[in-house]
Length: 540
Ligand code: MSP
Image (cartoon, rainbow, N blue to C red):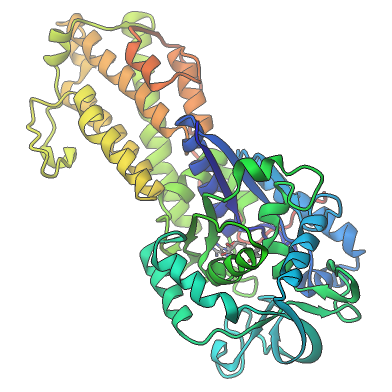
């Protein structure tokens, strides 16, 4: 059994979770579930980033005590995790003094002991929205484009981390593939950035200005810079600096840090440099996903185009939201999503697609065979291949000919190999689309044979057709499991099989007993569609 450690970034809790956070949770969850299915010992970490000026100010604006505020806000992220069927192994909070602080402070001490921390005066700009020291180069007309604000000018005595010392080594590790940055375009961006002069970075803020954070060990007049604190969550959660480092020994180095494009540099430069200084191994991979925009624009409160994950889940269900995020947001690109598009996808692919297919096949099985479908002889199965056009088969250069391809051979020769290759190329969205192609093929298969007409003349052949449909739906549900675990369970319920069957179990199966259930994806009336672009979260 090999170990597999995957993390999401930890969202700031200054505002409620948005669809971008849901995307990152869902992507990491699908990868973690896929690895568990393959038999890996998976540790999947997520959590919340709760320190810094941005959060302290949000608490003040809300008129709440900061700790009370972060307790409430981080609960909303936990709620999203549960509602979206995300199954992390652990969730860490950076305000957790027992679990996180010792690790962050140990990291600081190690960097100091290595001689990589020194006192200096920082004179320059700070963008509170980014919680980052910025230069004129990062701004447009003196304004941070992401936050629409001028950064603050600060002049203060801070601790500096000797980042410049490590830039060349980090670059080498990326170039030589020890630290993989995926996709390649992001790797190139990072390498280009590392080819320029990298400056040392201020790693603390005066405690009198920024009291909400972790005190610098041995100098409580300073608070750790929030990124130094937050990045360490990936190891504090494993017990680094705490009483037991068993998890650290088992799971570090991390296999995948999943992060958005705006924070790639923190993960591909500052974090590896901190680890090098502390004498710890580097993570193996950083996956950089794109951002979701809405109606051609970055989502923002002022534009009123923020898509709220909670109301989407309420309207369409968690499975549908996972489907949209995992199947229609390319793993690495930017995507535009609108409520209209989400509604269209739900109706076409889920309600009229998978949902309708499963209920038609169930209805026919129950009506013609009282739900009992058993495997016919191979010769009979071979006599009912796909009749559909090869372009639907999307056979590429595989030389598949209409008349040769049965649902079983299509799954074996097309769906499964492409599904696995997609995962190996880190394209989970393409893996999900392979399953959707199969399901569309099965719809087409019903049209090919029209079993409802055939049943009067050739019941035996209809049994063979239904066997093909039912066993293929079973296989499809197995492949859907990392993406849509609830749907996979529901399909298992309809087919009368245990939800945790392996691929070997399903290949050995010789019979199914189907029962009718309610629709997997009930139609949602767009008039009553309650998904909102603005969100008034329930009180925790
Ligand atoms: N707290 C830091 C991360 C610290 S990790 C040690 C942070 N938080 S965040 O809340 O601003 O962002 C969390 C994640 O959400 C980031 O990976 C970010 O890229 C992602 N997204 C923010 N907006 C997004 C979209 N519109 N679309 C997709 N992902 C988005 O950065």
